[in-house]
Length: 374
View 1 (cartoon, rainbow, N blue to C red):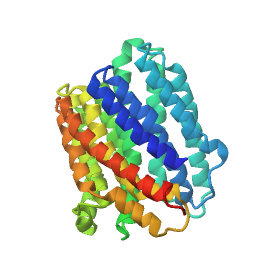
View 2: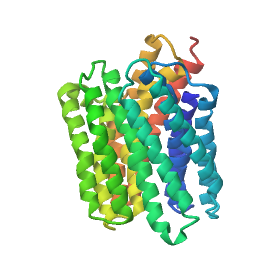
View 3: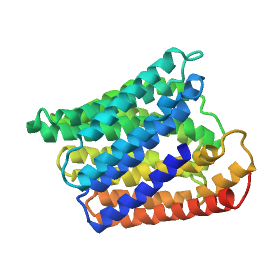
View 4: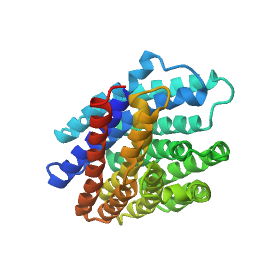
């Protein structure tokens, strides 16, 4: 299932890029295609894989494994509602809200019943799901307070991007990079435990600033930049050599980190009306999500396709998917910055990087999965 959601997310990126370039729909349509139908179910599916590891517990029950497909259905409903311009996305919101709430309850249950103390990354995942629930509640509130539509829309946007996606991504990056490089990060657990209040506070301050009081954005940025500075220091000391290599997932993960830092700055411009919100969302997708997803898949997709003991097959597939990752990441970052600055033609540069990864992905699956038997 995980491999399927991963491949679907790549396809969704490609489809959204085409829609954005053709101008066939308003920007909100391809943006929601990525966020709702691509990233939301992929994050939930990845969490179902990581949470048993973080809590040293068993495989999730079937009713939890059904949550990513339910979120995919909800995301699809939201996409078609925007594409049809009827804006009746109540069914999508209620379905996603029920699935996310159930998921949060299960995370708490696993944390309580964990063998020993759960890994602190679990608290980041729980906080991310809570942000998703709050973002969905903001959308639900539009039906009752339509006069506050823009305020609730801004809350929804920032709780989704910085909260749900940002918390999940930054915490996962910190436990994934040591796995990619093959050397531990001794301080990761303590850092995650110490930095969580900073990022939660920063997310809430930025969301509130966008909705009501813009000067709060500076405090929110500061709260977020503290843990990001700690992470950058650590990676520079431990993994600089691997990050600067042209091949391998480490370069993509580092580019995602850099892209997220850039997005925070662009988000401040958006809060003060100096940047179009659609441009900011496109920059978020290109400069952050694309290097994040391609880098994570370079490392994790072989495991998701063939779970169990790691073999030479897994190493070969990682080499194929991680080839030229630094160049892909430069395309993503440059395209995202240009799109975020208002020139959407910059998306063509991002599409070049995405096409390169899709060709590598297709070649790896054909040669190692279709043509080669286990």
